[in-house]
Amino acid sequence: MIKNVLLITADQWRGSCLSAAGHPVVSTPNLDRLASEGVLFTQHYAQATPCSPSRASIHTGMYQHNHRVCGNGSPLHQRFTNMALEACQAGYTPALFGYTDTALDPKTLPAGSPDFHSYETVLPGYDAEELLTEKPLGWFEWLAGQGVPVPAEHDFYSIYTPLRRPEDADKGASYGEPCYSAEQTETAFLRQRAEHYIDAQAQTPWFIHLSWIKPHPPFVAPEPYNSMYDPDKVDMPVRHDTIDVEMQQHPYLDFYLNNKRGQNTYWNVIDGKGLGPDMSETDLRQMRATYYGLISEVDAQFGKLYAFLDERGLLGSTLIVFSSDHGEQLGDHYLTDKQGFFDQSYHIPLIIRAPGAEWDAARGTRISRFTENIDIMPTVLDLLGSDIPLQCDGYSLRPFLEGITDVNWRSAAHWEHDFRDIAQGLPETALGLNLDECSLAVIRDNQYKYVHFNQLPPLLFDLQNDPGELHNLANNPDYAETVLKYAQKMLSWRMNSNERTHTAWQYHPDGPYYRADTQRGDLKR
Image 1 (spheres, rainbow, N blue to C red):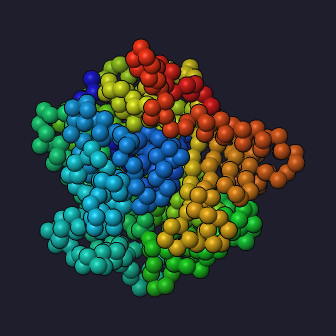
Image 2: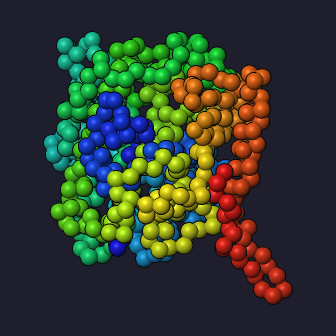
């Protein structure tokens, strides 16, 4: 019986970065154990980037073209319900440890509200037990109590500056230890806060969203994770031989790579060295090694939390969901961060462990069907016995958790990216677009990937022969029929997933009709 819910998101985690998924370098023994006791979804995808749009999709169960959170700082309309509010209806008091990156509906804010200055307010429905924002003051206070020197609030990012020795001069920019230890990271801090909260609940059922920031930049890791992976042995990025060739693939890439070329990026700059698209091979290798170290650090902290739940006898009553909001390019296609259309920004992990013998048939299985982050909310609510709101575009994964694989299911994954720049208008100026034209949508199955841009040329990749997405076939006349077919599939997907808040209702002289049985149509698309 499910009594408690633990929803974990680890920010910016690439879907391939699990040893259970066969990654050639990274080791994640604790998450591998979770996968062996639950279900691992190997083709799981985010629906949007960056953080705010993706998390809006997770918590509302909706595609971006319905919730319309276009970027960090785009408000989420108050008319939409969300997973936390629905959990409240089920009798829980949802607790947040971390962040939801939610900008609130301006209609709900008084004039002059400080919330107009931040996208880091809390999603309605959650009680913020420990809010961790870009200025992690709670973490700083905790560190200071342990004697760690913390910077002033105006200089908070300096806490991530690695301490480098003279003999480290020839190492990559992200090499070096921070001023805090492996048991003093943000990950450890939130884990301990969550454990204290759980202990305080005694017999009261709880619903926790634990939102870990790592392996999100800044790319700096304490020992032993800083040197856990040898930069000379990491897998190298998938990309063309030069940036110039990569940029020729599409105007969007030309704009983005040109705009970032020669620039330092915010997540790690030391002595003028940055981690931009034209970073050195030394910086590139170390960046990947440090990223893998951060993943192992999160895995270790998850292992401690899992052991805590086991010691408290809670594993038999707690639903555990582990996922991410989006991935990380990590130098693939010369990109860092998360944006655009490539798989590395959208393919993410999903592991679900449901408690109780009724789920035993599926334990340790791997599901290769296409799943999406919008499926998490319907799944959690379904397992709690709650109704799934009509607004949800996602579907419950319950059949897979029960060991049922013969399911009428989607045949492709879908995602969107809105790259408008309201403050500066850089892509609009460079590409000759207006705000609403700065968008793309992707439909991706096992054979092809089609990328549709609003007012820019499309892209088509043959994933069977070109898994690295290096050769665009959209302009090849031999593939004109394929382009048309996938453009039509995308149109059908958009039409089928239009916002549906009141579409199942009809007012009638005999009274209102509500057709819940046909509320969402055929899943396979």
